Length: 328
Image (cartoon, rainbow, N blue to C red; front, side, top):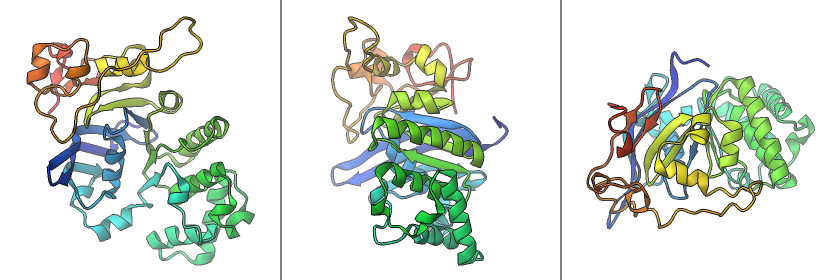
């Protein structure tokens, strides 16, 4: 894996939704890098900010959202780009695979028209005939026959529509693919097929991928590293095996323990007591403190810093203050 240069870097990224009652801090001071051919999984409870983070990278947030900090795509700070400049990047250098393809595909446009529009928007010098050839190759990569180019999205099954979305995402060979819950609406058999396909495609395209999901089984299958988000914070970032076999943050541990395991007899189903804090009034201190079995006085008084431990893992927790150094 190429570690010399990050495809995408987030530097103290904040995304706040402005409301009459004040800012909702959906993503609050998150930093990480992702490299070519790497898959980074983002996990956490609903409302933790992981989908907002993915949308922020593409700058497809609602008008009420405000982005602070920096997002670098190679050497380009995309937070400084206007909408016209971002349109040149979306689909070409960054693409997205959405949760429900039917909300992303135009039901009255043929499959070929989706591809032609995507390709010629970014590469106007390419003729319609060449665009169709590129579309056919992309569909072949995901196991769809060229003969389906003249069909409409509603003529496909859910799994086939998601394959088409993957083909659209890779047709221009982007540097970064963001997959937001790409298999949630599919049954388990089709889900497994789509996950295997995504792994194969990423190997062909050599893109970096951010996989956003609440399914810990999916990230175990797909990722190199895992970032755990809670209430807008990135509370832990580590290699996949480290997260599963040696989780550090109390929230990460609780999240893993709450996954049902039918192979262990007499195992009591655990859950995380309490509720996440309102992102409108988060206050001081660790945002997990009220639910944390290891919380200390300082946890309620001061927000922990991002600590980088000796093995390179990142954790945002007062328990490890003496073991790591604060990331600037």
